[in-house]
Structures are given as structure tokens and as C-alpha cells.
Length: 211
Length: 315
Image (tube, rainbow over all chains, first blue to last red; front, side, top):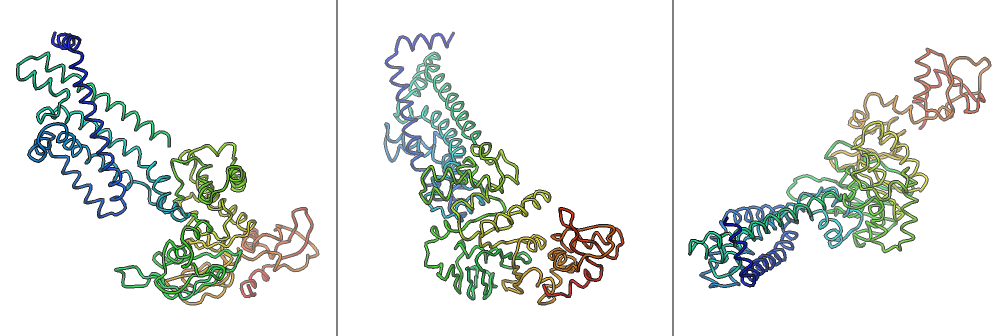
């Protein structure tokens, strides 16, 4: 059984496995954090103008159609190999869904709610923090969910440009035609992606139901 | 007092004036209903009073002060704002919604809490039940009650209401109109209300401002407007039944003669409108109706002739 063999390999090489696993996780979390730091403020800023929103949504949409491997490969000529180009590539991967969902989340707020806030004398900042942000949160979480799954899958390819992570096992498995080794990389990645999907899906539902 | 001095509003790219040289004085404690066909500038006019729109020319004064010199946020916190779609914050409880302006003004918790209870009571909602609810758990009518309470929270002198009953079913609408009218009188607010419903304007407005193409066509009491429309447009806007509409504004008491000798048939109350008296007379084909108080005292008589003469009497 391949899975049992893979599991035995993990037990025998715990240090190696967990260092790759942690590296993978770190790669994902750092990239997501940076992408959020870029996409959220940008999204809020862009959402104020109808025109800018339209442009942003379209650019983000077309960026999403570029395959992950192409983005990863694209960073190599500029940044070489290693962690940095991998993170940059993953950020580029995660920004579009985050930006898209932030902009949509804000644009979908009932205009009358903002009109009422304005008419009662709320300032720009109060409207942002007390009204727009909480109302856009479910949509933003949906964006983080999509972004996280993209990044977890994309990080598997980071191995090609020396980013490390669980993708190393997949590459090694293919190179030496060792299927159990391939599963050592592939299965945790799949589980991580499923976990992210389930967790953020739950978070999104929970936040939506509260209103 | 709110005073609009030759106020004009142009929107960029539009060849015509949305509001065109409007002069309007609104006395303290009165309700003015702005009415007219869509695009007549009534909403724009209202929104210039809390600076949601800036006049292109002219001035708006509140209690003698030019509001262009007041920070819009400070101004708006002093002016209640009610809109058709209500615009409650869907993620906030009813109490937090009502407390919006007190929160902006930095009221302490105890004062805000007391005020929330007071306001919910005032608009006919039970604070114990409602405070912790979310807007989506309420009916449309209840939501507008909350919207109204929220606008009244910091006890503003002025209330702006943009078609506040427009999205409410007809039965609830009439009930809310009656209640809100009584509340606004009780707390003596200066109210500017936008509506496209003539009956609502007649019912709620101490004065009605009829607008068309950004201009004020007539500004007077409902009675005076119904009795003497300023021009053909106003006449047709009021409708062919304006004489009947006017009867609903006159109380039986003001037109009745002393009680007659041999009372018989139907009776009306002194506070009833002539509209009701007319309906009663028609229903039973009477020469007139006796006027009786709630506790049964006969206080007068209203003849068919006196009723028909009412439309010529001064309003």
C-alpha cells in the first residue's frame, strides 16, 4: 500500500518531513499575510470609485487566469531561486482573489446604508471601520479562502524554483519514480487545502449568520 | 428657522438646474412637505439642508447661520435623517443602531442606554424585546420605527425625511403616518419631508411646497393650496377631487350651527372631518347630521348646505 509506505517514510524521517511541512505552511502564511496587506487597503481605496473598481476587477480577473506555474517561473529570471521569488510569486497568486472579493464586498453594500451613515454625520473613517469593513468581512473571508487554496497549491510548485516545502517530495518522487515519496508531498498538501476550504468556509458562514 | 435664499443646484453634465433660484422659509416647529413630480428637485432641496448636496449658488441658513460655514459632520449630527430604505446597519443590534449619533457625540453609556429605552417606547417598540434584535428580524414597519428613533436619538431640532413611508405597505403606512405626526408634534420638531403622495403631504404637512423643474410653484397650508391652486399645473397636480380632499382638513366643529330641536338619524363627532360628515350625509341621504361629543352631549348641527358652503369659506 503506497499510503502506508509513505506514512512509514514520514515516521522514519520526521525531521525532514516536518521541516518541509513547516516551510510549506510558512510560505503560505507569509504570502497570504503580505497579499492581504496589499489587497485589502487597495480594495477599500479602489472601491470608492466605480471606474477604479471596474478596472481593478478586470485586471484581477485576468491575473487569475495565469497558471500558477507560469507566475512562479516568471519570477525566476528577475529574482533568481529560493524563498524570495517563491513568496513574490505566491503573493501575485493570492492578491487577485483577495482584491476581487474586497472590492465586491464593499460595492455590494446597500447604498442607502452608506447614505444613512453619511446623513447622520459619520466621518469617512467611522464609515470605514464601523460600517464598510464589518459588512465586507464575509466577502473578504471568501477571498482569503480562495487565496489560501491557490497559495497552498501554488506553494507545491515553489519547489521548482528552490522555494522548498512539500513540493520537494513530489519532485523527488517523480525524479526517482518513487510513488510513496510523491504521496508524502501530495497528501499533506491536499489535506491542507481541504482544511483551509473547510475552515474559511465555516468562518464565512459563521460571520454571515451573525447578521 | 430654516431659510433657503435663492438656492440653485446644477449637476455637472446636466444642462438644466436641478433646483433653480429657490426661496423657502420654514418656521420652527412646523412640518413642510416638499412635493412634485419626480425630477422636480424636492429631494435635492432637502439634501442641501444637511449638506449632503452643496448649492451651486445661494445660501441655506439654519437659525440665521449660513450652514456652508459649519462642518458637515457637526451639522448632520444636529439634524435627524430618515430615508425610504431606512438604511439600518444590518450588522448592528437595534440598540446600537439607535445609539449611532449619541456614540458619535460621545455620550456616556448610562445616558445613551436611557435614551434608547425612551426612544423605543416613543416609537411603539418594546425595548426589552427589541434592543438586542438585528434589523433583519424586524418587519418593514418596525424597521422604519427604528430608523425614526435613530434619527431622533440626539434630540435634533430639525428632521429631514425622504419618503419615509414609501416602502411600507398601505395599512401600516397610514398607522405610521398618524403616529409619527403625533410624535413630531409632541417633540415639536421642524420637519422637512419629501413625498410624492399628495394625501401624505396634506396629512403630515403644516405647509406644502409644490415644486416643478426646480422651482417652487406654491407654498402654503394644505387648505389654502387646495382652495386656491396657484396655476393650472398645481390644479391638475392636486386632482379633480381637491374639493373633497379639502373637506378632510376641516373639522365639523368649525362649520356647525347650534344644535337643532328634533335630533334624528346619524351623528358625527365635533373633531371629525367634513369628509366624514359628507360621507355620512350621502350614505343615509340626510339633510344634515347632528354633532355629538364622545360622552353623548349634543353640541351642534351640520346641514348639507353648510357643508357645501365650506369650500368657499376661508381656510
